[in-house]
Amino acid sequence: MAVYKKTYRPYDGPLTAAGPRLLVIPRYAFDDLRKSRFLAIFFLSTFLYPLICALLIWLEHNASALRVLGVGAQLSRVITINATFFLSLLGWQSMLALFLAAFVGPGRISPDLSNGGLALYLARPFSRLEYVVGKMLVLLILMSLMTWVPGLLLFGLQGYLEGWSWITANMRLASAMFFSAWIWILLVCLLALALSAWVKWKPAAGGLMFGLFFVAAGFGTAIDLVQNTKWGHLMQIFNVVGTVWLYLFEGNNPTSTGAVFFRVTPGEDLPIWSCCAVLLLLGGMCLYMLARKIRGAEVVR
Amino acid sequence: MTPENKPASLITFRDVSRFYGEVLGINRVNLAIPPGVTSLVGPNGSGKTTLMNLLTGLIRPTQGSIDVLGVSPDHPEKLGRFVGYCAQFDAFPKGMTGYQFLYSYLLLHGYTAAESAERTETALHRVNMFGAAQRPVGAYSKGMRQRIKLAQAIAHDPQVLVLDEPLNGLDPMARAETIALFREWGEKGRHVIASSHVLHEVDRISDQVILLSHGYVVAEGEIQGVRSEVKEQPMQILVRCDRPDVLASRLFERQGAVEAKISTDGKGLLLRTKDADGFYLMLNRVVLEQGLEVESVAPADDDVNSVYQYLIGAEGATV
Image 1 (cartoon, chains in turn orange, red):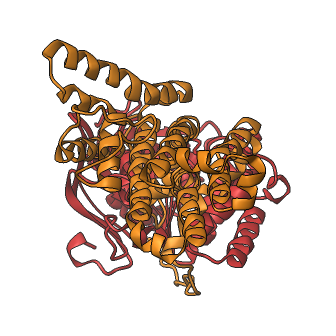
Image 2 (cartoon, chains in turn cyan, blue):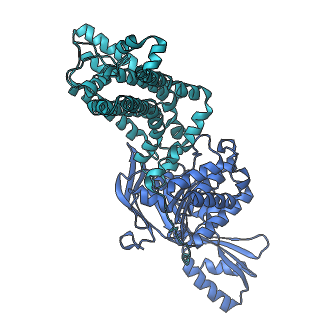
Image 3 (cartoon, rainbow over the protein chains, first blue to last red):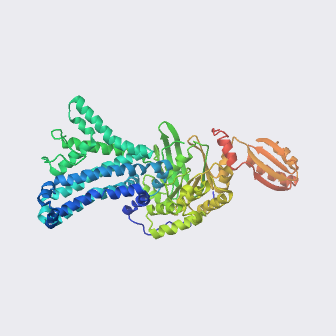
């Protein structure tokens, strides 16, 4: 056997922090998204509703503008900056975020699985969890920009115009906006990645994502009608999420029916614990699906 | 050296088995791989890729333990720092150029942007791919893809380089350069572990071989050592001398002689014997007693190809 003198010296220079390394994964994904004209236009158009909301807030605090428009008293009656206002914003933006995730999400993991790229990531100082978080970052950032970021900016605008007392009195709205949006973002991201890991054909994965929301809701309604119960609502993800949102915004005694697209039918509201359990179950299933697929090697050749 | 008393310069497998459901990947493998170039040889499905995947931490053993220079593959954040892996099959994230491919993976290692850029260029030059670095990997030819895969495996200057069929698709010039690279890396005291089906190239590359068949390690070690252990197959020895007939007649006076062929030019004797050591002693005596003029004496079947045929057979069945 050959005996070699060891002349190899490993690198002992500085390394970057582990956290920012995750940003390497979405590094080129954002470039790809920017190149898609449809996605770029769609993403920019999602800021239309927050801009209208900002305009309404500004108008409500600008007496001279209201006088010019001649809608002073009427506008104040129609537009009230309260939980319903922010729930509506969240509902709209969350639905748009779902569409974006259905377009962007399925392309996150499936190409790595079909191209064998996963082994390249996992053969480095990089864990499976870091890979999933890295892949999720694209969606997390985009969906955050569409949901809680404009929500909190609008809250800040209203607080700036209304005064500190309004902020302290309505702090719950800000925290509810933040946590509600994150519940939705995490749920949709996990679903998108799990489907991306299991369904390689992107259009099918996107379609399946919508199917999960709308077809399951249909099943839930059928169960309600056949069994004369309200528990079928647990299969309606919009309803389940809407119930949690309503609780976060208004507590146990809501004055509204929740966010647009996420309405809770009065008298048919589900216990908050059951909705939380459904969301945890769904999230757990997605994590299990990801854990099954995100592996460096699995194929017996 | 036994796996039990290894220092941290060895890669050790202790009683390692890996099953894919009911399908056997590898079974009860015990290995201690020293620095240098080690080739994994075996037919398709023999467990070479499984062994490499286990070594790089991409899969976990069903039972047993693995130790790569003192680090368990259960810790990718430590292992990935000094292991480079070149997969057998094309594996590229979609849409990246060759440069982006290398650069982004170096950033994942934690190198700074400047360090990553420098290492990317060095690796690209090393595999002669600098000119094509700005082209998408998807547009590369088979040989270029193989070279860029090799570049990503060596870019972070790993101490352990794991290469699954690294010479596939390379033209003769690139093969020669790649083999030279492996030898250079092995000589620096690194571990270069490569699988290959091209047995004559394995001979040129390897300091030692590991022969696998049906998930079992059939043999491991320096190829001449492995060959000498295959006692049931008579050793072939080629002797070039002035009177091969004399040598042949003396050969058959001994036990263990199986076959002797005199070459057509009358100057060579190809013999098969089960007692090679005894033959060499006898050859010395014949030279002294009869004044035989010997031009050369060389084993004719202590290469990987012969050992492979003896131990695994043409159809991959263990002999």
